[in-house]
Amino acid sequence: MCGIWALFGSDECLSVQCTCAMKIAHRGPDAFRFENVNGFTNCCFGFHRLAIVDQLYGMQPLRIKKFPSLWLCYNGEIYNHHTLKEQFGFDYQTEMDGEILLHLYDRFGIKKMASLLDGVFAFVLLDTANRKVHLGRDTYGVRPLFKFLTDDGLLAVCSEAKGLTDITHSMTTTASIVPFLPGHIEVFDLKLNGKVQSLQFEQFHCCTQEPAHAIYDTVEKLPTGFDVKTVKGNIRTLFENAVRKRLMAHRRIGCLLSGGLDSSLVAAMLVKLAKEEKLPYPIQTFSIGSEDSPDILAARKVATHIGSEHYEVNFTAEEGFQAVKEVIFHLETYDITTIRASVGMYLVAKYIRTKTDSVVIFSGEGSDELTQGYIYFHKAPTPKAAAEDSIRLLKELYMFDVLRADRTTAAHGLELRVPFLDHRLTAYYLSLPEEIRVPKNGVEKHLLRDSFKDLNLIPDEILWRRKEAFSDGLMSVEKSWYTCLQEYLQSKVNDDQMEKALKTFPHNPPSTKEAYYFREEFEEHYPGRAEWLSHYWMPHWVSTTDPSARTLSFYKLNKDQ
Image (cartoon, rainbow, N blue to C red; front, side, top):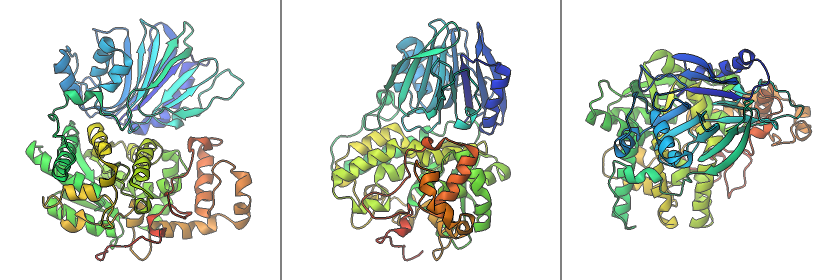
């Protein structure tokens, strides 16, 4: 996890513009650098470093003697960098995983370079010899990237939008800040005055495609066929591989553990593989909730079963209320369910940073979208409709769950890893027949659960535990966190404000006092930036005005909850 910032064609003094980069200092607490580009007085890079791989040579922009005209600023982890180095016979100068980008770009060009990367990344690659600037972002947008481009060609990019809001320029027309689309690359021509012109913008990978790097993967070619035994075996193989490759780190590894299916599978596999790889420390797991919350109780059972060094962070509604403003600032969104779920994650990340030495944190994001885990999938009209919505959710992750996971952990200088969004695992799962991916016997994610049946990886009661949203399972069964939040915010917004909500906020107008309050706080930090969120996250195929699963008529709690 790092923070990247770059500016090309600045109209103002760079020393003034560079102060904008300090707004993302939380992303890289270990070191910081600004660097001007030789021969381009109005272009520069800013970098905040969180040291995970290659403690000695990890500063950026990365430059090596072999390619003196290449400047690389990137945030991410490339899990197959050793494999590609050996496959193509590259001569490395550092131990940095990101060095592979320079070698691949030199040999294959930007699009093939991006497609061969097995990992998560956002990058700015400058080629001064060919006067080109390249941007790219991983398939699911696990690593964030925002772009600011004026009509006359001033380009600024940053890991978070807040690092671009105060960029000054000479144009009278306003320039919008937009998220750089996941799975895409863009190439700009760099003019003599430092301004840019876009030449190429295209997708290099889609979630339904087998990734180009699969042929170089450490896992051999998978058995073919859609019989149940083969499919379940392949899912297990790819999931284990996804966790194993993410052990790449020089800092201590931990895991978020809500006690739900996804985080429990990740934590259990992580503990198992950490022992096999002989990591010199026990895996720490972290849960958050009130004392009697479903999540705390379930996570405790899992931690005992897998033998992790477990920590429970006590959560009170009052602490949650106090954190909401900070959370909205870091998230850069006013989406209802994202904010609700982020509060607990933000507080547990804060605990991890201040009370432990774990820095690389595994989590279960992406599984619900991939395996049709949301409760509303029970109401899908057809398997085809369910499969299409699964892909939609995966493509929108960068606006919702992936955004939440990145910002809440990066706010405290932690790096998140999400094995369920592994390229090969997702491509394989999405290639399976639509009818075997839908909920079965009244249980969502049935295929995933069944794949780990009778292995004793996690307790059976957890393996078959009903889906519970992170923001719902934090508190007691009788009173959900979102209910507490709604009650608290009733007095913060009056009826007159609600009547004028459509006029006050014409884009995505809030329909509840909770949503109105979130929007007000967002506008305080980011006035006029409502278009950053195209739509609210809401369940499909059901009639509801609230994103919580607990509001759905067919929601049922487990007997032990």
